[in-house]
Image (cartoon, rainbow, N blue to C red; front, side, top):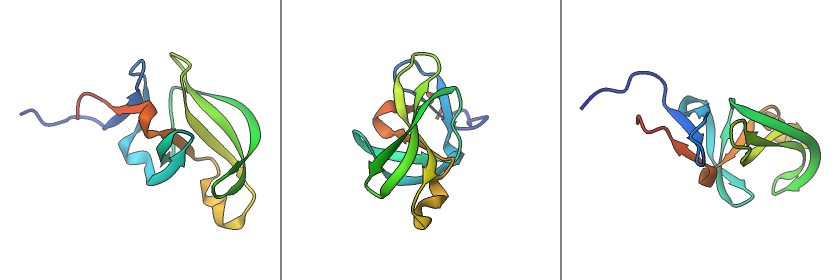
Length: 107
């Protein structure tokens, strides 16, 4: 069996566009709109939509939906601002819904 060379990637489930690295996962215990989600420090090949205030499970946040840059599928959101001090660590981070991403075929 060949050893994996290069980083482990997550892809858009629809078009297989690379959207994040496995090593950028901060937490796997988040909740998305449609179930479990992962919190990532970075995302790539995504477009960021307009900012809006949303009342989430952990309080009021300013977020922007993120979509795959290739197929426009909404994959999650970016935390732009957290209003509660305990939630500030999320600012600038990305939620990718588990159902909307897949592991790259190489791992």
